[in-house]
Image (cartoon, rainbow, N blue to C red; front, side, top):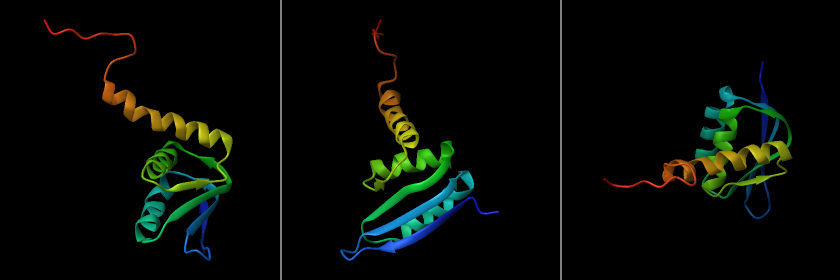
Length: 105
């Protein structure tokens, strides 16, 4: 059983849009990464018809968006999750919870 369907649409200005529908799970992440890597022009992902995503899918979407990919018609709960995933690298770089000072002794 296929968990998601991806339609590739090319607009008049050369923008490639992957319209995704259904569920995006860890099983689909590798395929989506491969599709994105095959494109040489500007790419967007349209999530209008996505009903469900898992953590691996959100991680892919967050890193892709960070790299410049446009995410269109993103459902609010997925947008919130992507935003939370996008914050994590900053928190990891800082290394300490807010309010804690590190002293060299």
